[in-house]
Length: 281
Image 1 (cartoon, one colour):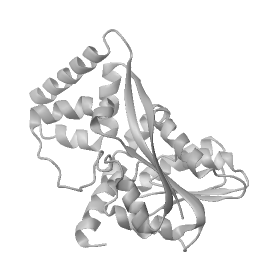
Image 2 (tube, rainbow, N blue to C red):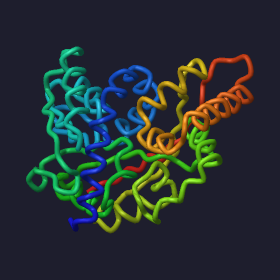
Image 3 (tube, helix red, strand yellow):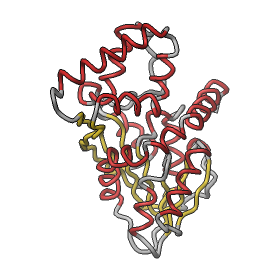
Image 4 (tube, helix red, strand yellow):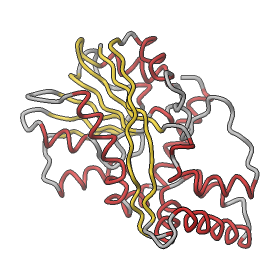
């Protein structure tokens, strides 16, 4: 990996470690929110028996822990770039008495596993942030056994994900942030239909399918939504750090107004959409 990509990886590792406490605080809400995508991934890879499954970019442990509970005679290797996120995953595994897991911090672009090691691979919301997505796809293919399946989820287009655009749209309008460089890691980097298909085909995978999966973020109140997004959203915090107190208050009030217009007198339950892509080696 070239120095520029290594710098991106190291910055992301630092960021995820920094925000791990927020993800722990909101783990129950965020895992409920992301569960439909994890369930779709699990259906596509069909773990069973004594399968050995690799869960990449697992964060606080999902869907790896759910998979491990499904295959008591098998095992799951849970990985992430962030050691602090994996500490939460280990705590979640102990709390749920899930013991057939190995937890390992590593870089998806340099997986520390032998060729043909795993029966299946899951990766929920990781690809958008990998410095080199093709290298990641190649590495996943290398460690997957022939006949094994891989499934991943990525965020769909912004118009279908008001849960994030509700706040980032207001921030962008008020701060006029420069757009990221083309192809830079980010939430909607993989939203173009067919992008992951191209990566997987180039990696040598076949039988590729792409489907939409939807979910709902049940934040309950505008205040709870604002607090959660500021606890877990590194891009949000980074953007707001460029604003003074008056501007931050203005942005907060406008976000609340947006949510109140969409959910007048109702609980804040915001739709989300992801693409789930599956392939076979």
